[in-house]
Length: 251
Length: 251
DNA sequence: GTTTCAATGTCGATT
DNA sequence: AATCGACGTTGAAAC
Image 1: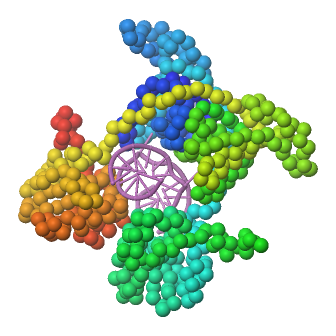
Image 2 (image 1 turned 120 degrees about the vertical axis):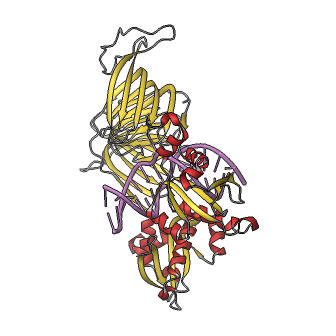
Image 3 (image 1 turned 90 degrees about the vertical axis):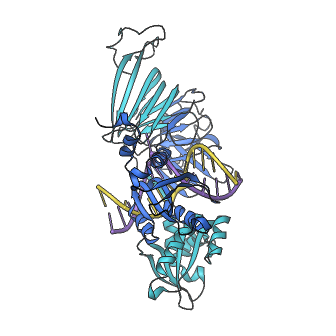
């Protein structure tokens, strides 16, 4: 990983065109060739970037000054770490390109720091508590969460527009489609509505109803769901995990 | 901006739980307090992070070794740049917390580099979009794209839930609502469906139909659109731009 | 490989 | 503050 702190100007052309006016920024070049340009604020998203696979080429150029075009006095300067910390008469131009006609052009006017580190392969991130877990847990605990007499038909029931998270049967034997979300918003209700519309046409699923299940349900989503006679169900992840694994239960 | 290269282990607890096993990584602390942990691969997204507003506290701790609990010989070590490049008997523990019960805990076993730079406020990114352009071009070229006899009524036709991109008239004089997207996905079909539902209630627009126009239409979106009798229309951005501006046309 | 959906999404505009 | 839609989305899983 190469970390460069420099005064730089950036132009991107690809899926859109974008420009960064000259300022002091961090330029990060990762081992896979990807390039990230970060300012000292904002969130984790860089101001500008290029994803791998891409190719970086660097050249030193003379700068056209305001008074007159500069002669190419420094045209053969090396493009190593420290060459640009000078009177500012030369600049490095970094051009990052992909095979898909995307180009990121970085002009470095002054380099304050340029260091490279070997980081190696990362073991990667392990996550816990995502939607897949919720669906899995609810499938295992249909009766505990929904009540006695409820039963699972199957997870990921296929429809032409994608699988329904859960298909269950209520105590009266009627089919019920369940959409599971971590955070329940309007999109999820729309999604479930589409499934119900399609599934309701099948002879064996006529009269199917829906349950919108999530750890958190936004007011507008709840309103929309209830307007469509879809039941809302708040899921307690910790409690469900506790039921799943007795060792996690409070003593 | 503070840049630290270190062997570290990370735990995040908040909207989910996540863990990073020990490895050499970049830890970036921005001026607003946000923290990013990057590996040497992947795209611009960090492995783990904490967004501002948040608070970082750092403490030096003794490490429990495998053989026996280490005595706190280095407990009062300074937490400057070079203190951890030692036998590895001490670690820094960085705890980043927000007011919303999110916590990012970074344990630094060995620090290879620790530098801070003043970057100042960034002038920010200027974008030049594609999406709005599509709608504009289609409005100008209704007859060229849809066929002889079609005509534009107006762009951005207002409805209670937002404006429809285009309202046009087919050769038979019937009104047609067009939703324009760069990438046509299910959401866009839902959006158009809502417009059609509302507009169809107006006396002068009874029997209105819809066209879903995009540079690219995903199969599921197409399936849903056709199920609702909404016509799908693929847009050729380059060709439309060519029609728009003769200087771009092939000679 | 492509297509699909979730995301600690982020980001901006608007209510 | 909350909602909505777009994103150069990114990332991962299913097909």
